[in-house]
Amino acid sequence: MLPEPTHEDYMRMALKEALRAYDADEVPIGAVIVADGRIIARGYNLTERLTDPTAHAEMQAITAGTEFLGGKYLRDCTLYVTIEPCPMCAGALYWSQITRIVYGAKDEKRGYSTISSKLLHPKTEVIGGILAEECGSLMSEFLKNCGRI
Image (cartoon, rainbow, N blue to C red):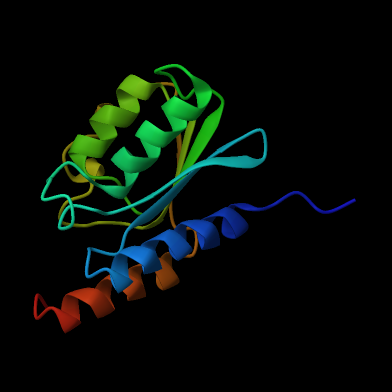
């Protein structure tokens, strides 16, 4: 029998999505949603391609996950995302009633926690810092190459 995947294993899957964004010249954030030990949704930033400021990785994953489950709630699901969600995504995650959010690197400028931890549903568990260095390095490299830092 295979060992159960860890938070790090799922975050590596989210990092693969972030690399897809990076390769497409999008802000490199990736996300996966897991239910019952299985990835049910994936997403990466598509804001440039879709010319849509709401096309964040989390939003793409939420849409795919709720479609997969056939309802608007993501109860008993975990979102793995490479960078701390922004306030917009935190609001959408609130309404989805997602059970757990696991993120890689903290976003000191635009992360939801810079405004309030109350943006998430009160029952949502949050775990931060999983593969934070790898997740943050990818973002830093992208921003450096774009001349944003």
